[in-house]
Image 1: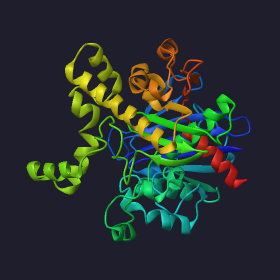
Image 2: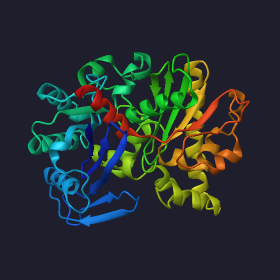
Image 3: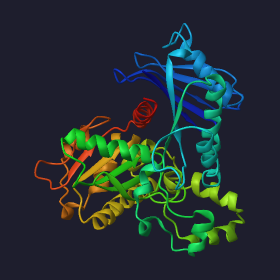
Length: 398
């Protein structure tokens, strides 16, 4: 069975085609800058090299059609015909409280998903555009939605509620939802397979650390807390997002800078974080280079970044009554030893003992980073959200 996974953003489409019988990737790539004159598709060839194809792509239906043309083309094609695609799985950003698991997409589901647009005005409409494009081009192919928020729907009410008047939750659904759920679900399951243990009885902290970053506390395979909230802005310091901030500081900024609600949202999401503190870049690699060079604001940015992660590990240890496993994933978590090490410094009282040498050399591979006598097992597990989406799609269409 061949399953296509699509992740449609406001101006992008990422795709990955799987052969689910052999669990192999047949093709992958992505379109960027949809609706702009310099739009392009970048694909990964079987030998790992990248190929960029420039093409004006005015909107998402044209983008999906271009992906289909590439998949069936004579030069880079992995399919003889689109009829070989058995199902399409979509990354869906915000499912609100309605969606606690992946679902087959039909009109009722799509109407309920569209009702969540206010909670994710940039992402949900883009997800819908991808679904509509596939429906137009492949009307008989089943489609499945896999929601970023679904894994976190097991949080108890005392963890997801904000201390606002309760009627605002009832009226607008204002609460903590969490994101990166597909990644947290994948790595929390995979780390148990990797270690040969059962999720039952295990207290796991998953650290999805990339340009966007979040953590989750997982007990018996179920999420009990996560760092992101109503939107992806809450929680950890990120590439361009500020993370946790006093609401009073937000209104103070609005008064002093004359920000409208839209402007302050854009500021907190796009002008803060690593980029705002370092003044150098929102790219962790460049900020780490500045840190090594002794650049004061880069050093401050790295210290703040690691402190937030370390603080949440401690908080989740309290919430779960201890920790058995800590997992690092995401572009930064999988590759940057300084961030892993800095985030775990001082946690020996929890039973964390890091193998510094192993941490130094581990990049983008499954590995145990803790010492043999560490009470907490620290691992790197590269995330594979697309495989998780493909697996859910396979289970539902079968």
